[in-house]
Length: 414
Image (tube, rainbow, N blue to C red):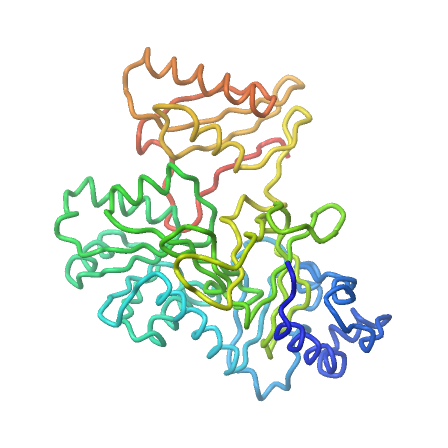
């Protein structure tokens, strides 16, 4: 992707004083002559920053402004290891709200919409981000937070919520409960804004069909701002990311080399206006590609488009010597007739061998038909990925549902 002149100007302005403002970058760029960074090519020679760097800087080593300018912190949603703490100035909060407000506008919301927010609040950026954006945009925020599905459904009906904000896992759980309770005709939902985890085609189709809504992807991560960095539009040409706030690169995750537009690799993001914790060439571990060209029928300007996430570099798992990603499992599931969207992989090591069991939901209870579907999943998996699995067909709703992110891969070998 070619860096835009305005982006280069903002990056050079940031780099000019970053060592003086940030002990973190003074150390990281100790051997770099910042005056030598003058264009995109020289910028792309700067070292990457990674989550491990931010963990090493715990709690506030990444901070690049005096304490009196910090109004808030957030932390990534990971549950293991040292947490990553990101400080925000008031401008950071305002900029985040502005980006998120653009997302609501991009998906066709109006100030008459009622935005039903189910992601979590607190240190996690999700819930408060959805609320900030709705308030800045001018729509009514209904800040439910996660859990208590009975109350969620009651408020959806009573408040006539029109926009559902959720993880794909919780959106599916709500869709199934709405169908089970027979209350769809009592709802006013018309749009779903879904983020936090990748989701496959069949899952998307199920949620859209059962809720009767248009679905949109929202992208973001706590280290950058939170959700709202980008959003898809009605034409599904990719996720529009706001060029005046972030600069996107895609690199080969093994070599670090910048890849051409259209090639899948790891997203690298540089913040352009962030004060509290600016990030320069931050490796997200998210796998995507930059959509070539600037034109989209929706008419959104000043955006770079990325494709829906394929997965994460750290999602990779290895069975019988074969490296694979959850996205490949989803592709197999999506390709077999009679298989629904939900699956779970269980990996065990028994009698000196790896055993990979793939549980999936299917739309029939007939034992013979289930056996045929199991054979089809096993054959497709072997042909496409090169591993022989143990296929297990389950009924719709038999696999676990989650109010947050679903756990798809359970590795019991370690």
